[in-house]
Image (cartoon, rainbow, N blue to C red; front, side, top):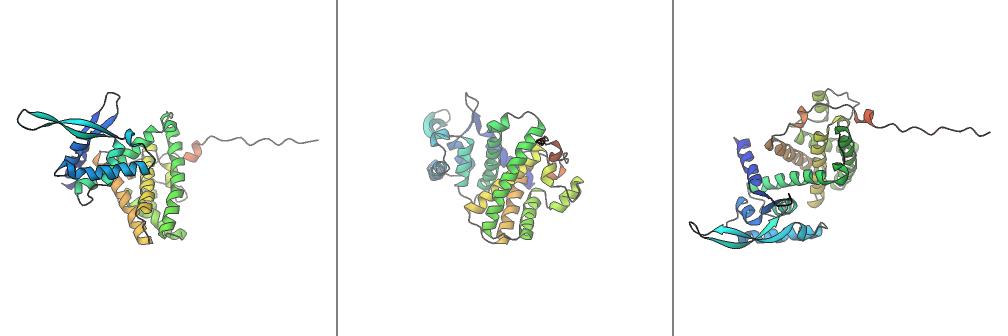
Length: 282
């Protein structure tokens, strides 16, 4: 029952999505305010302003994501009038739900929905990623991104108090358990038929790598943004982020990561670089 309710609420964000003449997705601020359960649009305006401030702070142009427009609303049985609104990009919606009332369940669901969808959109829009045509090429790209962001996640975890290698292993397991429905690294190895010496990330397909990449980047950002301190809090944060990513996968009808088949080792697919031949000098 809970999953059915959550699916319905998540689908609301898709139902109010529009596409302009250039094929760009957008949302109406007035419609979004209603979905997020604001009684009056004027109460929603501070959240929009905070989102605009966050947009500037992230180095983005406000005009790329927020465009003032006029919406038509019905004032009687047939009468309509124009009212001010804002045309919002997906990123703008993401910033707004991050700055909306966090005590509302629909806001929390919106935060998960727009965070995941925005990250996936970012990946799709990467010029380098869009040039890739095969599954193996996408795996290489995402595996390299994963390695880079795992290093950044490790640094953020260290700042939070996760210092020793054993503590970091426990921290990583909490992320896996959140995303994989309670399975830790050892259990994932068993589930996918991997040997103890084999690295999980090296045997993931592009879909699974993308989910884990989002888990890593969002955990890193949350640790930094909320200045989380202490091993237990860091572990719980990693678990909660992983769980939210899993929940979103469920709600959009995706396959659970633990059920995705293990891929061939990415190391076997890497192009071999020939070593330069030594020339004997006489």
